Figure: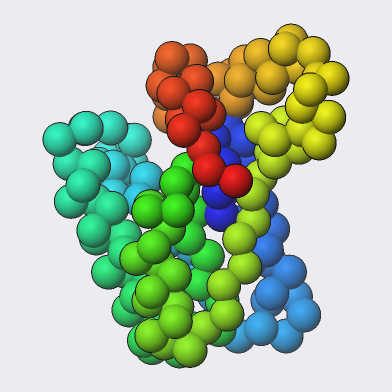
Length: 151
């Protein structure tokens, strides 16, 4: 999964997992770095100092599921750059998996008619992501992510 916070990645990840099971799939795992920011009370508490460590733990978790032969492993992160996706892709290659990138919000981040596109459409999309994201990611952070997003 790839997309800005609030774009619908987690919703799409759950839908993919449900489709997999409903069509006869036996095993599926959704791996999200966000899950490592959930405290003992079940509350999401972001701590930037733990971001690198938590990404490493999520990469390990995804690799373990692949190593164990889980049929479908979904990585539910923003994955704004190729570098961020590289460890997951390498694990997939090492474990004999095919990789499918699902970019949620592609038409809003990379409109086909970019030259003719009105700037307000992009701004409206960013505003929607700000409103929908469940972790309180501020608009400035989402705008930074959008600017560095690699197609």
